[in-house]
Length: 502
Ligand code: UN1
Image (cartoon, rainbow, N blue to C red; front, side):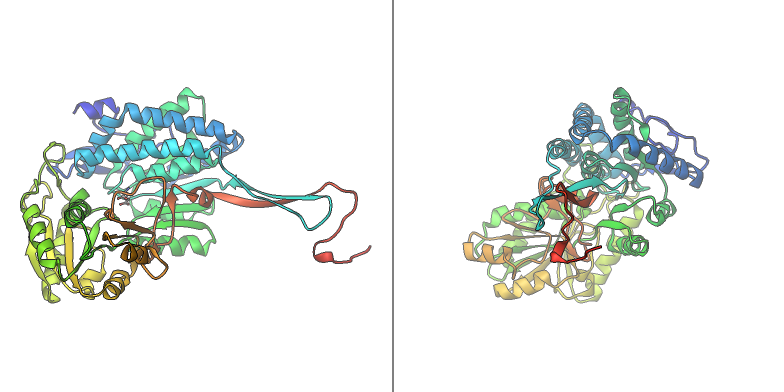
């Protein structure tokens, strides 16, 4: 495997790594490729002792990093972006090989990392605070933004590298140091990224503890969430996981950025460009084999175009090429593992039990890899199963009559990540984007639910957790705001005009 060699991760890998250094571990987790279920490598897991070492190194590195001017930190991030450009192909291949998304999406994921690096470089010169006019004479007031310290990043298998970069690159220009725990299902991706970043740190003579990687299961995540030395935990994953993380971090009054489950819908109105809507729907529903938090799960279709949409979808689904994700002709790769396949099968059963009908697909296609045929099901929005996020390529078709009804169904789930409406009618579109419209963090017109650009703030409402990552002013969550008042006069007037003579 040429790409493993060029990433320097061929064969067995040692465990915990702060940056340049790696430590041997006694225990390990295995990395498998979902393309044929074969083991790729073994990666050591972080012991408590190693974890303590990592935190100590991170604390030391913070003292250096926070003193470096933000634009200079931006320059380090620029160099990381350059290295990622250099390694785009092998890293994209590794994402595909270890996670199972098709190569185009693997490349897209690395591109997302490069994009956020570019964004963060610019942001490093724009960590703006406001200045205020003091109510007191000869006083100056302003606010400034300081780094928090160690930022803990917990990411999921489905975006094994990009989600780290949204957090880490922005947090880095803000002056923070990072401890990253990736998914135990994609440990090699973490090691590969760590190696790329370590090169940049070394070339610039910077402490290895700026970017740290820990590996392991839930327990390692718990060490992080319970650790008062980590003021901010940014976690991406299921709502169940987010609830635990949120509770633990809140109990020590730490900060969180939570990016949890979605139950994203597209409304196809009678005024839609149907072909465009169909293309967006298919990408959203079967892309990454339905394992994006932004995947399209519900299709809310106006009754007048329902049959047309359904037929066209069945037609396209029949022709989707499913197979080896590294093969250029493949549109749908495997699911991540056996558990994911089982989960999908259970959901298909539940659809039938609850009164729905699976009208296409759902079959498990082989024994070795974890290939399934994406499914279409006709359901009602209030079925228990439709109310849940099933991390699989199942698309629910739901019929509506009036726009009001569509909106109620659209918002009638507990999650609130991404949403979209296909319509060429301006009133309908604006209503969907208004305060009375979509209740999600992302709302699109004539674009699907998945594949957001990095420039906007990414995240959602309700059980999606409320966090925002990536673009816009999401950087503020990685910093602490300080209000400063300076008295440059020779008297001491008190605010609110209080008279206090001593
Ligand atoms: C995720 O699935 O956790 O908007 C992130 C998208 C991608 C990111 C998805 N840019 O689909």
